[in-house]
Length: 457
Image (tube, rainbow, N blue to C red):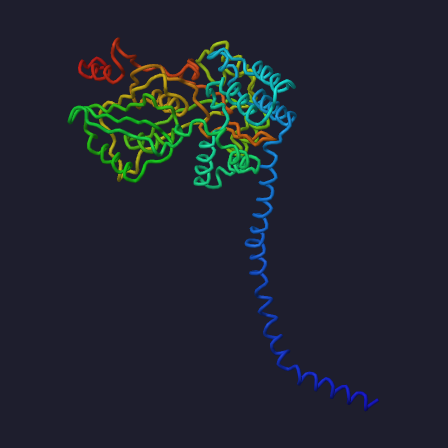
């Protein structure tokens, strides 16, 4: 027994002596491995996973693209039925389209669907896009921003929302869905009808001029989208500084189709005012699924008040609305009141305009331009001259975007029916100027005549 134990001790000693260096290396190596485990996990969860995801994403995109030319008639009918259903249960401006253009969108939808279902007619993606966009959505003439995204719009919106960050992630989720990526890449020629319309950054933004030195200044605002370059912003600030003691500043919004009211607030209004200006609007919504998702993601707890038409006189007292506005509102389920407030520049930068501010308007002013005109009229910021605006103010928080389930085509619409509590005139009919154009004169000529005659005093 002793002999066996002795031999075992010798064997162990011999083994330890022989592999001493190996054990020492393991003692050093094992803690290093333990320390590296988080880094290895991070590498797996980032680089390797991204590589794997990229490969699977590419394979999925290829599968989708291979299917783009093999949609069935049932696929197209399903997408079109879904589109009409969303409009019927979410879009508040169907009545406005009918009043303005005599188009019953739901009845038209039945006709278009019958064409798609006609077995004697070939049905492919090209014809589906044509029927859905050109024969159906375009009949709304952009009322409530209803339409199918063009390719250039699609790319521009992705770039804009990515720059804006996580606050617009719910829009990016729609735009970056794999079916939408595939169809906008694979069928770009079909979805790029008017590429020259979109690159706002290539258009002239502002025009500055001193019409009469020391007395009358002119500012033309041609678009309200994107941002001014640093050079443009500096030039505009210098212009406001030069003309701050002029008697008159004429702001020309004629032909401005819209963009974002925040553009005008940031670059123009806050540079010209010495005290805050504010206003309020009422927003009404249908309780459709797309609207509820949008409002929850966009406004959170703000959307909380249920609406019944019997309460309209309590919500908006001292204003009598037309029967057709009240009929539109019977379809609404929720409402809220939102204020819009613009504050001046910081006190050390503040140098408000001291003279009379005029705003030139015409029937080509829609969307954000309509919002700007309406807000600045009722806040007392400017005196309006020209023609009634085109109306159709949209939702200030951007439109709803949704993708058709099979094709991935993206549809846009505004979810809100908007009421101005200061006026019984519906916003669909536009905002009237304080002074209409004089016979034979345009808006600029009219205001210059008024200044010359001092007939506005």
